Length: 252
Ligand SMILES: [Zn+2]
Ligand SMILES: [Zn+2]
Image 1 (cartoon, rainbow, N blue to C red):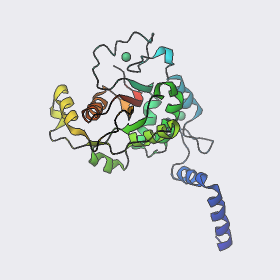
Image 2 (image 1 turned 90 degrees about the vertical axis):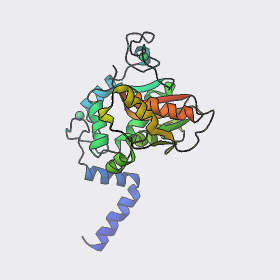
Image 3 (image 1 turned 30 degrees about the vertical axis):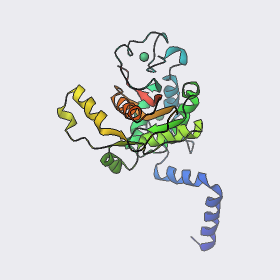
Image 4 (image 1 turned 120 degrees about the vertical axis):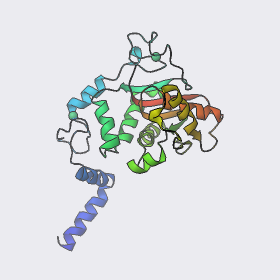
């Protein structure tokens, strides 16, 4: 390539600004659906039309989800999930059930190098659940064990929180919660001991802001044990009230 042509290309890329970065990402990850890996015709998109439609269809309407745990219900007043659900946060704000293609999208984000899905889905969630997230004043990403984060190179909760923050106009309090390595082998412990161990492992690294509605952020909620341990740590340090927001939840 001649120096003149090289310069012309460089100037064109510079003018493209952010689109240049996106073009590079598309180059590194050839455009294919993050869920079904079908080739994509439009640059800058992350899902094929079929997967995106299925993802949107899985999102329950406000009238058909439990106001406390976010699970899809026949009535917003009756919820079998909440009967024996004791958690330290006030309510869960959940976008969709943990099912494909959502599960595939989460896998692509965590293990498939599709980091851009984090902020993208965070923003989408904030738009879809604006009413439920309206009281939120600051976001607290659920921390990963340090070794896990080093291995992965990022914390997906932090990425999702960045997208939520941008849309909600609130700060992300990264590093507020600290997750120390568990001292005992988790696998050998029973459910109750595992829960206690988790509560011990998560603490506040500094004092949380008082009289501020905090919202924990994670990618997936299964039993809610991790979010519960995080909410306990915040409450012990004087913070309240606390909400919990996740992209998906595996309802019991
Ligand atoms: Zn697809
Ligand atoms: Zn419920």
